[in-house]
Length: 127
Image (tube, rainbow, N blue to C red; front, side, top):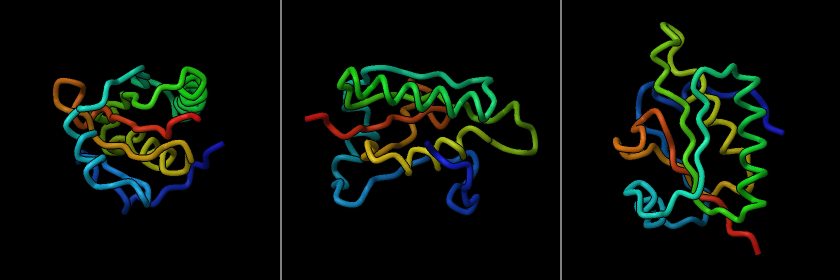
C-alpha cells in the first residue's frame, strides 16, 4: 500500500524528476538518466484518476517483480489537462515510488521516451 500524503515542496511542477535511494551510486542514476538500462515494461497512466493510477501502479510493480524486471517506464503525463492544478499524477507517482522498497532510483525519461511526462524506474534485483 502507498499513502496519498505528499509535500508539494518536494516537486517543482513541470520539471525533471529524479530520486536515488541511499546506497545507490550517483553513476547508476546517471546511466538511468541516459537511458542505458533496457526497459522491460511500460505502464501508461494517462487519463486515469488518482485511485485508478494507484491500483494500476501497485499491480504493475507486482508484475515486474514476478517477471524479474529491473528497469521499467511509467508514463504519467505532463499534466496539461489538469489546468491550474498542475501534473497531479506526476506528483503522486513521485511520492508513491519513494515509499516502495523495491525502487532503487527513478528519473524523468529521455525526450524520445516521453521526457518529463514519463520516468524510468530502476528496481531492486530479485534473488
